[in-house]
Image 1 (cartoon, one colour):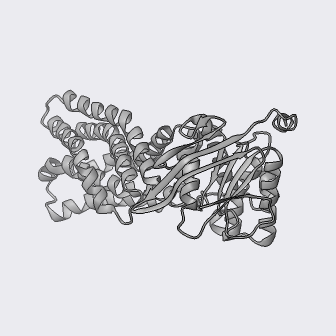
Image 2: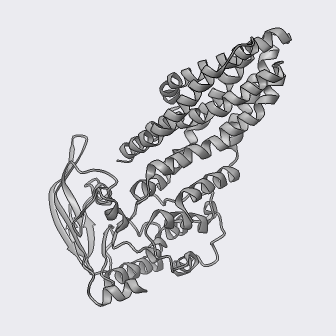
Length: 211
Length: 221
């Protein structure tokens, strides 16, 4: 709860900066010298046609791959540092769950890898995502949309200030999309920054980053 | 719960629920060894002479068979990405993965080896030495194998490539281990070979997690 109070009293500053970022894959130059900043409460939709490097950009922002030039910082922490990683939640294309494990076991493991609010119970997050009675189900028996919901329940638990979501709405039904949009909005109301890629028009008020 | 402990428990759970990954190498170990008395000679003298080599080669190949499973699934489903960008040390998480690989494949081989030794008419003293060399040697096999597995993680059907990368590194272990057993059969001192096996174990314990973490980072790019 202290976390929320801290934001409301206004001593929470978030400043995300991308400077001269370039990325090349093979002979293909994906993007060149991008400059971009995002501050408190901003939601950024990364747009671009297929193969323009949206996923590559998110991977670079997450610290997973290195850019060919330029650098990224959050509150003056460079993307190579451990502190930076604590403030970043990256949910990629893959669902990051093992089909041989139960829903709750997968979620608990993901929580350990990320910075999450320890006061919140994992089952509470699953309930919010509409997986109330599924915690002991094996992920093998879930549908594609339900698997997506398992990993997206990290959004309820995460304490990271910057979210990087790669196509968060794939496989979700319209209610699911609305749910995730609300979670993103709530995150932004709390002062967080969210980058996401999507081809769908969303009801969120977004700043666009066009590749 | 601690990330390292839960990585260990997670590996065990996955392999218990999907046991073929662990049982296949073990069956391979038993089947290969039991073919030798049929094909070469059932005579005790000949078998006990070639037993150290046979058991060690079979152990090595069955560990090699199981290496693919260390990273393959976690790479496909994206968990390695999460491990790599988390604020925990990915080298330590990888060390735990090598350790659980050893628990699931190396340790069963160590425990089964006395039986295999009896199959091939090894005397009691040699069986003890055999178990000792396997106990020190198989963790090195898992650790060095982890390096190979992390190098080929993105490549489809890279079984042969893995063997080519890893087998040369396994050869010193094979030489020291099987020579220790044959020396003990002849009644010689074996401290030298055992110490060399320990040196190899310590070296791979120090280096393997860091090399594997670096290789995985490159493959995840």
